[in-house]
Length: 186
Ligand code: FES
Image (cartoon, rainbow, N blue to C red; front, top):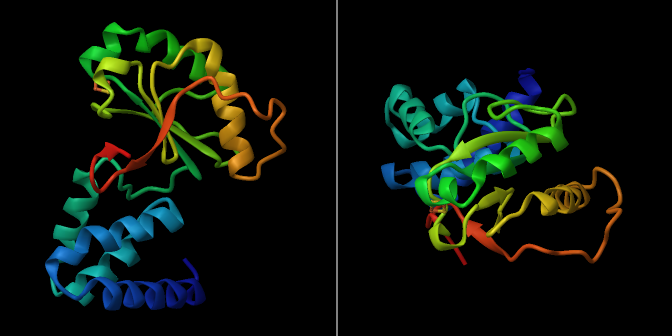
């Protein structure tokens, strides 16, 4: 990371600490804000946060490692999380997961070569009676079918400006905004 980039990040973290307070309870909101902008939290950021909140960097690293929504390594711009808990498993999650892998050309745990999408499994997304459940960025999709995957990915590409949506106006899947802090859809 360049010195100039470090200075920018440092200033952003100071602003976040000013906003959320320089206390232990501010740790998660600050980390989520860094994650949202950079898609991961590097060592420099962890050290800066630790210094500002007066906690040990190892504790910050532990929090980053504990929460599935936080990452210490660079991830794609769009995180795609597929629920692999029991209800979604029984509802046919495996077939949907294979369809996503085929469409993106990557396996779960990987990131596309263009850095746009990362694919990973998650635990329950709060849609157990409406599985399989899929979280694309902050859009939660329920009762997902293989036939919907192409459109869901196209919508995600369009939302992130990768290229124009080829099937505009087609929205098969009910979706909601997902709040990782609350761990539920709204
Ligand atoms: S089991 Fe998949 S959303 Fe709960």
